[in-house]
Length: 201
Image 1 (cartoon, helix red, strand yellow):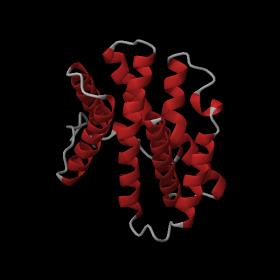
Image 2 (cartoon, helix red, strand yellow; image 1 turned 135 degrees about the vertical axis):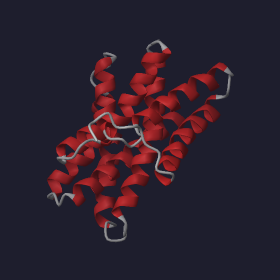
Image 3 (spheres, helix red, strand yellow; image 1 turned 90 degrees about the horizontal axis):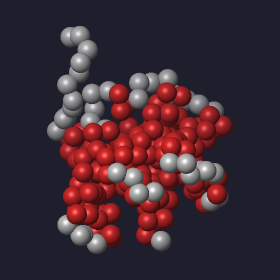
């Protein structure tokens, strides 16, 4: 139940993140909803297809559709109160990043995959929805820019398996793993940490 609630939280967070991005691009209501939907379930859909889990999760549980719709409506209603859309987008995107990385890791373990592959699945689950969102909004995806993003998911995956080896309880394991991802993401922005660019100066 705890794990399911985390999944719902991540879905809501990424849906709101998608809405805020689409609003910045001045899309119509249908366009905003589409962006919210692909942001929320894009990573999980790719993950489920890769591990052969079909129909994918959101097709078998309409609660995900309801949650995305609720996130869409709430973000639209309260958009004027979100004075700093940029800050709000970052906040919800960061929550989704931490929660969905964790979900991808667990899904990989459920089908007995190697830890390295589980970390890859966690990173895809957390990042691919945002990649799709940014492409549809005609901007370079965050994961491909100098900003630390996917690297944090990989770090979170390493922390997850380290704590698992130490036999940490599941509840604490989930909280610490997602907490590390969210904290490092916040610190990366506050202290302007970034990866070096390989392009020409």
